[in-house]
Each structure stands twice: as C-alpha cells, then as structure tokens.
Length: 349
Image (cartoon, rainbow, N blue to C red; front, side):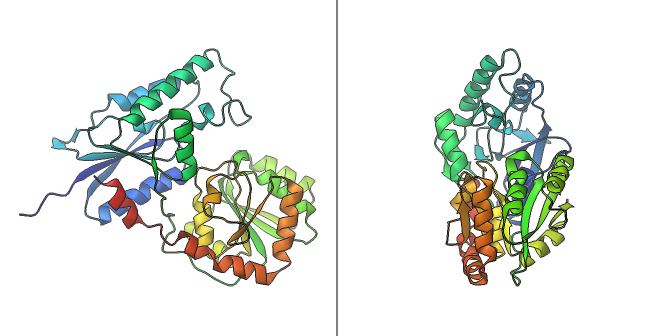
C-alpha cells in the first residue's frame, strides 16, 4: 500500500504590491516541496504596520486560523516564515524564520524605525515582543535563514535556532562569463537600508572612471537620480529599474564585481547569486548576513562603512584583473552546499 503524501502548508505574510527576497523564498520552497512529492500550498495574509496597533490585528488574524485541516482533510504540517505568520497554531509547526518585525527589534531607536513616535508605542512594543516569544517557542523546530537572524532571535527573544540557508530563486541558472568593466549593484527596492547613496558617493571619489549599473526601483528613485546628477556621475551610473531574471543573469555573468552592502542584512540572495556567478562581492563591515559568505581577500573585499574607504576598495579591484579573477574563482565553492534537497530534508517532520 502506497502511503499518502504529506499535506503541508507554507505560511507567508504578504505586504500588498510588494515583492522581495521573502516572496522568492516562499515560492522556491513551494516548488521544491511539490517536486519532492508533497501536497503543498501557500497561505498568505496581507498585513500592514501603520498605524502601529495594526500589528496586533495581524498577529490575531494568524492566530484565529484553523490550519489543522483544509477541505475536510488533515494538514500534516505547517512551515512559517516571517512576521507575523509564525503566530499560526498547529501541533506540527516548524518555523523557518526570515525575520521578525525589525522596526521594534534591532532597528528600534534608529533612523530605520519610526517606533516611539506614536502614543503607546513603548507598551505596544513590549506586547508584540511577548507574543513573539510565546508563538515562536511553540514550534517543534526553529530554523533561521542566517546566523545573523538566529543571533537576533536569541538576543531579543531568548530562543535558540539552527541556521538553514535558502537557495536563490536563480539557483541552477547562473552562468560564469568573462569579467567586464561594470560594477553591478542589485537592489530590488531602492531602499536606503541597501545604501545606494553611499555607493554613489564612493564612485564620485574613485580615481578610476568605474561604470555602475544599479537594478531596482521604488519611491526613492527620483532622490537617487538627483544624487547621481549632483555627484556628476550621469555618464557612469545607469539606473536599470526592475529587470527580468534572464537579464539579471546576464548582468551577473558579465559584471566585473557586485556591490551588495545593506545595513545588517538578514541574508541576501544577491550575495549567493554573485558568488555562484563567480563574481567578487564588494561589501561593508556592518553588512550582517552577507559576511557569512564574503570573506575579505578570499572571495570578495570588505571595506569600512564610509565612502572614501569604499572608493579605495573599488579602485583596488579595478586596478588588478588578477585580483578580480582570483576572488571570483573562489566564489562558487562558498555557496555550493546550499540546496533545496537539504532544505526539504531538514524542514519536513
């Protein structure tokens, strides 16, 4: 008698009209589970963080769902990803944590968070953190997408976890071509946390006329365009907007190097895509999860987080084809162990 395939639900919070790495992770997991023979679907609820009290409504919405059955048949397991989807309840709940709501955790009290501006923020933050700790502790297993995310979970919620790296949505399609003369910066959203302005400042300080292509779009594009003009880089920097996967693969294939240096990044698919394409990664000392893969002088270059240091690093790389080739050649080995087979074997109970 053939055993019936397990029925698994992936729980994914969705900000309407927004797509990033978390959405790519969910779709990749769904496809991988399906190909492995499981019956799988995605449950996604929209959520908003403004006004701040809406976070409690989003947590409650997940908590009220009955995910133990669907269409009269039992659900064998749920896999929860980012905030607030992990508030869902199930006797066989596994959490693969993308991140918590960073505005009330590591970004709290910084320019990256507006928490503290609204009445009642302080008590509301305590409530959300208490609920987080409770619902995350219920999981039979807890994994995080990087050591960096796991360290935050331990620091703020007092919970342990194991690291499980997700493959890129482009896994298996990346190519290793000749090194060109262009710096590639991949930023799906031109978010200040990705530090595009710092890159523009650095390019204005380089002694070599380094060309750069920046992919991505968003409400900050006009401000970035003004910054490029102000720095006199209109001939050297191209804002490519959103690009297709096929075009992005070509850009990786022919780039000289890839700049990827968000502030304390959770993980960063760009990192493993660049390394998988044998491109050196230029990043900064406070880039978080990026530094779990990029090692200075081995497969990339790591600079202090200021424009002059970044400019000097770029000049160094553009001055030596030998250095570029040596760093690039070491990239694929750094990410070779990341696979969907490993992810599924780990997540499925």
